[in-house]
Amino acid sequence: MMPVAMRTDRRRSAVLALVAASLAVSCSSAPDEGADATGGTDASAERPTSELPAANQATSSIAVPPTPATSAATATSSSTVAPEPTVSARSTDPITDADEPQEVPAGSDLYTVPDPIPDGAHGTLLRYQEVTPSVHAKSRTWRMMYLSESLAGDPIVVTGLAVVPQTPAPPGGRNIVTLTHGTTGSADRCAPSMAPGSAGELLLLGPSVVSGSIIAATDYEGMGTPGAHPYLVGVSEGRSGLDAALAARHLPDAEAGSQLGVMGYSQGGHAAMWTAQLAAEWAPELDLVGTFAGAPPTEISTIVGVALPGGSSSFIYLLVAGYAEAYGDDADPATFFTPAGLRDLDLADELCVGELFGALADVTADAYLPGAGSEPPWTELASENDAGTTAVDAPLLIIHSAVDDTVPAVLSEIAFDRLCRLGQVVERRVPP
Image (cartoon, rainbow, N blue to C red; front, side, top):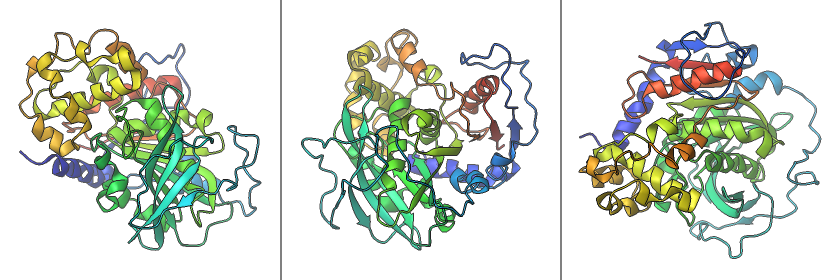
């Protein structure tokens, strides 16, 4: 069997290579009468193939996953007047560097959580550490630790990476692209910031760095820091992604503006859509201009009820472990797995995804209780985390291979149809 990492790289490569030849379907920005967020495919829904509005044309015309903050944003970011200090809804004061973050020397520990966690607004940069060599030319790459907030509203710290161009910033400041990564596993050592040179999606964003954008790449809650990772919990993903962007604005020489693009692939596609959905409320000081979601597993309510066998069960184990972390007793794994299945649950917090696929290769239907994931509370919790249930003002581009055997393309089709009914400006491309 092909190693998981190799299969994932081939999925990315296939999407990149075939985007230009993909079938593009767009919907108008006018919602249907009686539109709601119930999901499903409406056979009578009209899906015109006209081009998206001008603000999204640059995003939907390139042959690689777009960086919305450097494409859709460029039409609106040409002001030659420096903006006034941005006032955050999280504070009555303009955003400043009044609370100086700590620079951690190379070779020293960045990941130990401060005790107690400092007071501060979510998105506050606490620590940063330079990574050499930088992952892109004419830039500096930084590990960072920043404040965020758990699903329960408790202060937490999250880690990630940021790439800051070392070219002159444009008038109005640099655009920011928040990158939400695909499934790597939930163990701390699976966090992309632990091994920046292997962070595949980050390496693909060279053109964005060259064009002057800051890349802010979250590890997600619980990766690189204590606690389990709330896998495919949308609010956790979205907060982590937005707070990474807020924190990256205060790195050395960032000279950041307010315009934000979001992109992610696979789990990251789900996270990107949630990041966009939360942006206006969670980070109103940022101006979302576009989102790219590649192969997003949008319909968690569908996925959770599928008793996947073998290595593919890794995704279910990660989800159940993550939901147990996020929802506590409301997501008791003992109501999902048999005793035989429960014996392997700890592996989800100990192994990276390739290792997990191997360790769970012999999982059968006997690991699951009858009807696992198809009854409350699992159905309700999963539905809360479906992506694309709310329209946002900025355009969305979805790319999903028709032959994806990990995240079936029908999932994003359901979300696409739902968003069309809600009035979202969205285009979906399906490479053959």
